[in-house]
Image (cartoon, rainbow, N blue to C red):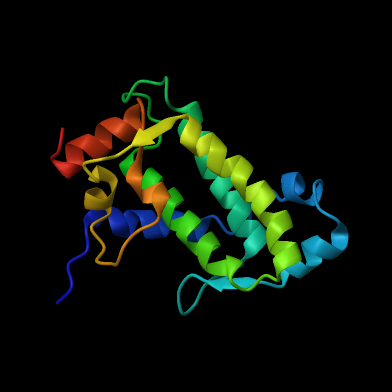
Length: 169
């Protein structure tokens, strides 16, 4: 029997409800033909749920911006996002990576320009997680994870919860 951490279940719920994000940031930066082609790339989240690559990108952007906005807020603020929200964001980034394989070289290049902006923002408020605390909190079995799983916010409620739930200081 496989064991899954409790936060993984919450993270999955958070991922699956972000299916109607604002696409204006993406549509304002791509040619309409490119956007249509990207909308044709469907990434399956589960047997019953799927989402387009632009929706995933907008969701990743939303999650990263929210996590950054919460850095200076106290853990007692009921609006802040915590460890499970960070895990949900990273799961979204995994799904984006899965969808990249469906793109031709030219479209992938255009998409990766947008993706790199969000990735850079994420990097700007995180630091290397040498103890792999975030992976420990997620607790899903799996193979080698990508770079985004090896980063932790430098401060804030999400970091505090990751440290608490991982059991690693």
